[in-house]
Structures are given as C-alpha cells and as structure tokens.
Length: 485
Image (cartoon, rainbow, N blue to C red; front, side):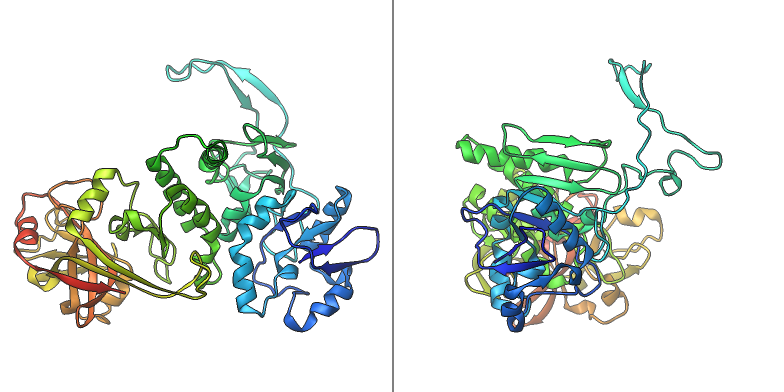
C-alpha cells in the first residue's frame, strides 16, 4: 500500500499499490520520535484512510514529504506509519522484512535528516551555513605536498574553533538526528536515489551510475560528517560488483559487514526487540554475498569466533548495543574452530518465514573446554573499570594487576558486583589460544544454569602469556558438550 498524493486537493488516499511494481513512487525516511503520530494505519481504519486523509491532520514531516512529492511531479508516496498496519504484528513483520526492497525500488528516498521527530517537519528555515569565502594557502607540512583549500570561518572572542556548541552556524561535525537512529542505516545504504534535508543544506545523491553522484548547496566534510560515510562507497562498490558478477573477496565482505554492524551498534533503538529486525535488510543483502546461514546476527561460517563480540561502553541500562570483537583474519576463525566445535544450532524465530527477523530463543550446542572461574582463587571487583580480575596466586593492588591476571569483561557487571550472581556459577570457555596477545578476547565467561546449560555473561582476556594464570588455563577444566542459550 502507498499514499496517492497527486493533485492539489487537501487530502490524500491510501491505495493498494505494491512498492516494487511498475508505478514509480517515493519513500520517506525519518525519525518517529517519542511522540505518537496523529494518524497511523490500523486494522480498523483501513477503509477510512482509503476514502481520504486530510493533509492538515497529518504530522508536519509527512505533510512536508507530500509537498515534496507533489512538487517533483510524482503520484505515490510510501510512509511506514500509513502504509504498514501497525496493530497487525504478522503483517508488520512481513513488511519490515521487505524494507530493503521498498527503499531500493523507490524512485527517490526523501530523507528528513534534520528532524528528531515527526512533529518537526524538515522544510522550515535552515540554520545559517558556514560562510562561502574560500581561499588557497600553502601548508608547510612534509605530509601535505599540495595546496589545500581552506574555509575561512568567523570566530568571536571567548570560544575556540573546537567549541562546536557555540559556533554561529551548524557544525559539519554535528550528526543529524536521523543519523543517530538504528533503523535509518539500512534505509540510507539501500536507497538508490536520495534527497536529503539537513539542518544547513540539501543534498541529492544518485547511486545509479558507475559511481555515486552527489550534489549539494552546502559544505560536505568527508573526513568527519556521518560515520557511515567511510563505508557507503564500499557498500555501493560491493553491490555493483554483484550486479556485474565480478570477483569479490569474502574477507572484504566480512570487513564491510563488521563496519556496518559497528556503525549500527552505536545508533539508538527505542525498542530493544528491534535489534535484529532493524538491520535485517542489510543482513539479507550480505547473505547473498556470503551464501551462508545467518544465525541471530552472526554468520555460521564465522562461528564460534563471532561469539567473542564486545561492547563499546556500559551505560545505565547495560550494553544494549554491541559490536563484533574485530575483523577476524582466516586463521583466527580456524583457531576458534579448533578450540570450540559447533555441534548443532537451534533457532526459534518469531515468524518462521522471516529468517533475518526477531528471534524468540536460540540454542547453540558446542563442545569445548570449560574451566570453573573459582579455580583461580581470589576474585576482586573493580567497579570503576566495570571488570572482575582473577588471580589464583596473589592479588597485586597496583595498576599492574591488569597485566598479571585474567581479566573478565562482563556484559552486565553490576549484577556480579552487586552479588546478584554467585561467582561459583561462573565458568570460562576457551575460544582462542591464550599464548598469543592480539588484543582479542581469549574466550567467553559463562553463567551456569542447569545440566550443562550456560549463558554468556562476558569475555575474558589473559595478559602476559608466561604467567601461571595462563598455564592454569591449559591444565584445568574439562572438555565436554554444553548448551549455550
């Protein structure tokens, strides 16, 4: 379904036109925000919206998108709130699974990047731009051999150029609200053409040529700007290689996927249950690259290595957004497979026909070496670092402790520190050889539940491989079959 917006009437109509068909349509990418929308599509009002929707009753961002669609001479507009039945979970999940197709097939994606919520709109007066005065200056720096273009910026007394909040114009280093939302990453990457409305400029991007074409009426700082800019062109290049059936590198694809996951992980999600659905379109795209099974945000051919994900930081609600540990060279995957054998995988999907969507529960049946954390003796908490440190011989109360011990980096450390979890129920699962210092975690910290059933609660690192703590990892523990939930 899409909105029919043609004409100069004061109302629009919901019509049964499937995005991806022959009729051209535009799609809106925007932030809902924390407010309820004035009008959304529900099971009970489908006929009412088909009969007509007063434009004045809609929120400002949607009204602005209708105005842009009409101005550009198009007839149809797709808006998620009005084209997806919001109180039909099955229909909604199916449409979310089609998001990649919807945005990719849209003639133009209207991006309301400047608006933090649907009430704000994006066609109001813009913030002042940086001045247009540009001059060339010779830079006396051995690393910079050519003349660089420099923008002359006015400064007032009392603040420095680094004080972005007091700048008299919109700093190019400031992210737009839309760039901070998790859902919009795949909408951005998969759109073929994009008309983007920022706080200080409007930008047109077309990805339908040999290389992306961008035109703007403001300044674009490629070295800062959106974090996603560093891999947008790589994603485009990879997609074009697929179209041309060119030879590609699996390692390069995996690196690109990890970069996308890192970018996605620092973005905001209002509902933690959307973590997998909000990146499902990109996962579906990458599945065609890898020709591999997607397992709850991981790739089967990278297990068990990908179990070593870590988090950027621990906020008040714990590390709800996570990232891969690093980019794994092939030998790291091989080493992990040597330590931990994947016996079977069981995934209970929210909807069986949506393999990239939400998951009810999952179990990983593995064989590996399990070591009781209590075998290390003293356990000391460091709340400031949100870590636990184990050392079975002696605790050294200096900064050297972190280099003379096994360091447990926990997903939810406050539960351990507060005593909500019995340390006797903590176990270590070795995933990578502890003799090599690569900066990667060496294994998982597991919480025992019952009958060889465990859940991950963190990762561990072993510092200084010649210490006794390292040798104990090789001598203690047992090899057995366990279930991770």
